[in-house]
Image 1 (spheres, helix red, strand yellow):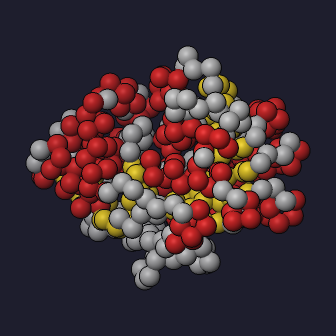
Image 2: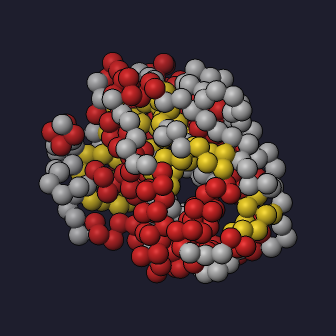
Length: 344
């Protein structure tokens, strides 16, 4: 069904050189599909064109370097697009605590520019990719899409702003928006400032695994392949079922940081004394937890990848792609890592 609906369509993927965006592009450009994909990415620190080395000779693939907050970059590409999926964002909470300015541009101004471009040059669907962090700390039952938003750090606050702008453009101008809020992703191509690739690559180098506070903060984990499949389902769903709506995407895999660290060390046969408790970050939410029945009811999506198997495969990917992450963890990353953890 996906092949038929996307036949000869052009999908604009903003932030398509990042972690989730790269995996989504690879999903769209599976062999035999006639879809065209245009990536718009500013190639900030977490964007990496090496993620698309296998596609550089593919006639269906086009890369444009540019900032979503720049109408001169966004509008000409929107003219060519049938669909838009917006992954472009600054996403790291620790960086947001240090400097909020890049987040305002990427997470609020950027979606505004894209939404205005979609008003001028209509697309069939505009998917705005968000996060579970907008709900804030969840200590009781998992929250559904009607829960109040309670952002507790600058990153999640800016994501609320982008979500609200998307909702407003649906209500005011009829831009065919779908907003998603996903739990923590893991899988190939994730920038190694994030926990799972950081712990995996540090353990391979026999370096400490820096665990904030007690290590008991819980997150729900979903494999990036499940997330991108959910997004494709929403991209192609009947308009009446999804447009103007918000969808939580989650897998129900709640684990705390120490549990993840233990599994990574076991997979790599590394000693547990590599775990190093460090000073907690400000405003560190203890738990995120979402109910995701709505997306199952509307489009039939259910996650397929069991966490234990998905984590083993992810660790194996970093073992097999050591050159990729060694290049990534050099230069500016080293400076950032030293600033973050040297005095904790």
